[in-house]
Length: 413
Ligand code: ASP
Ligand code: MG
Image (cartoon, rainbow, N blue to C red; front, side, top):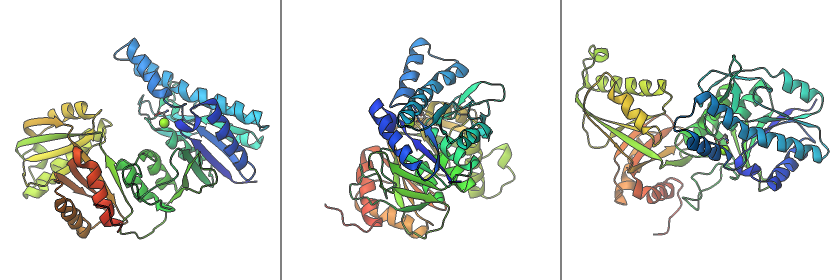
């Protein structure tokens, strides 16, 4: 029997009837060589529009009802895609998250997929029917519909690819692959033909809006091969994302401009949990870790960065603008000796990703930025990523300077 291929279309790929028909042709072509499972996002900006209407009805919509509402977006596109496939003479059937057996926990709005009971999808495949599955949704053990976080259709597709042991998962959108930086920011960025999953994950966490970060974690953990490709450039191979090692001293840059920085000024670094630590850096590290965990428990993804100007009592937390108010209120209640807390939105974070980042990368970033009079406010260094916080107004210049340096391309003055 032919191998399984999961094909996912993003919102822009199914925005209109015409585009749904175009996407259906891609599925039809693939179905000549594979057993295809199709996953769809909601049409265009449907999810935003549904959120908008609900906010007009009430300022605080019930989270269960909101998820049931948002799930209708993908229901629309899945049914229309099934019809489009049928009109091409193929057997196709739409499946909601419930019908596809996608079980989640009960965190409405940001649920996690806990299990996939793929029997119904397997039955369809056996009957040579193409299942068209709604992305972004599942259901709890108690039968409530849940959604799995914005941009979650990527995760649905990759989870299904894993559950069905698919050969690959093709993610179709309006971008034709993974670049060394967003070409809208850096016009001479180059397209990568392959990228290791771990580096893709760092780019996604760093703000590259190509794949949802959680979906890349699933691909990494379950060894799913993913191809990022464009719906509008037929035949283009895009970029393969897979668990393989390539040794690159520079993979790419990503930018997060939708950021808030929460600045914490501490009285002292004494807390019950860190009393046993004698050394100052140790206490600071433990405080940072504790705050990071506290935020993560509330579902807030945050990064703790170190200010360039040494100030042992100052801690900097970066979160998305949407999460900053909640983050600040959590930090205010944290068991630390807080003197002052301020939230600002005047910064952005640039992430440099490589197979292994080292002090040399770091020094070169510092030098390049200072040569171009771009102030570096804070940094953080992980195994495969350096985060650089710079003023928002200098975002574009900064990514271009760094890209020109690391990609070895001379940039016009
Ligand atoms: N429609 C959902 C969203 O806009 C899920 C997705 O597109 O992946 O976030
Ligand atoms: Mg979308």
